[in-house]
Image 1 (cartoon, rainbow, N blue to C red):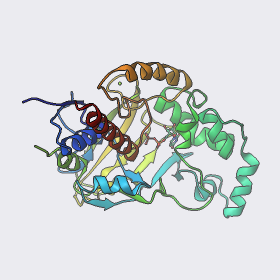
Image 2: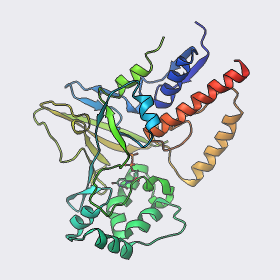
Image 3: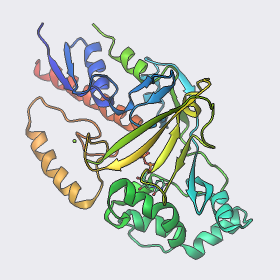
Image 4: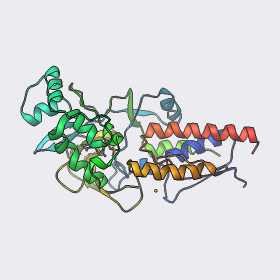
Amino acid sequence: MRTDILVVGAGYAGSVVAERLASAGRRVHMIDKRPHVGGNAYDEYDEHGVLVHRYGPHIFHTNSERIVDYLSDFTEWRRYEHRALACVDGKLLPIPINLDTVNGLYGLSLDEEDVETFFERVREPKKPALTSEDVVVGAVGRDLYEKFFESYTRKHWGLDSSQLGAGVAARVPVRTNRDDRYWTDEFQGVPLNGYTKMFEAMLDHPNYRSLRFEHEHLPDRSRYQQAPTINYPNEHDYIRVTEFKYVTGQEHSGTSIVREYPQSEGDPYYPIPRPENEVLYKRYQSLATQEKNVTFVGRLAQYRYYNMDQVVGAALKAAQNILGRATKTRV
Ligand code: UDP
């Protein structure tokens, strides 16, 4: 069979582009080196029957109604708001840092106004804030930076926060209220029957920093930990532990967890946002734009620290450009 388009990679970027082009009548051939669709969002039932995210926790969140509408053609949703705790000085405290984090850590009973004054006293603003260290020290001061960010970031990226672009730590907000949700986006959730089912529905039509995932099933306990995700900035080689049943809402007599160990070998999952990499990426980008009839889209193809909604948005745009171009040039 003749194909019009070859899509390399069956993650979000590839699947969205493939679906859009197939729906517009193009014949699409899709390849991936992994034996499954969904890229790093792939989920599956483990051998004990618990739905787990094979490549670490994925929680969808966005403020874009258009992107939710698009994905909703392929899945129903379980509305779910993610909450995480960080293990610091032997205490489990809300992360992102909020009023309760400060009170819990220091044994204080500040209110919203007091904590604003507290941050004003301890923060060391740098203008412009160029690095992730600048962002955090500029917002919450050195002590909170050291306890919650410094070692976690070194573990995650193998780099000091002073070597990483401001955008990395800026993903995590600082709050003076008691809101302990990880994100505040209007829409938050996971596909009701899992990500893989969503990708399968989408496709049901005629390279970076890596992680090692240690999955474990605990047969006789229905709960393992006190929060969906617990971050370990200072102890252990892993950065965080996620218990999937909180996320999926599944009922099961046992429970399954994943520990994430950052490493530099293996499949790349994260671009490393730092100035020298941006310069190198720009050189690739100028070569990429000279390629006729080849489009680069996705976290690794565009070297961007995309969230799931952002990569769907980028892929929808790329598909539109491809279709527009094809109409114009009658390919
Ligand atoms: N971070 C940290 N301590 C935490 C949580 C996050 O230092 O408890 C920093 C760290 O550098 C991390 C970045 O903030 O890589 C972004 O965190 P996020 O949770 O968005 O990472 P992701 O879920 O994309 O792995």
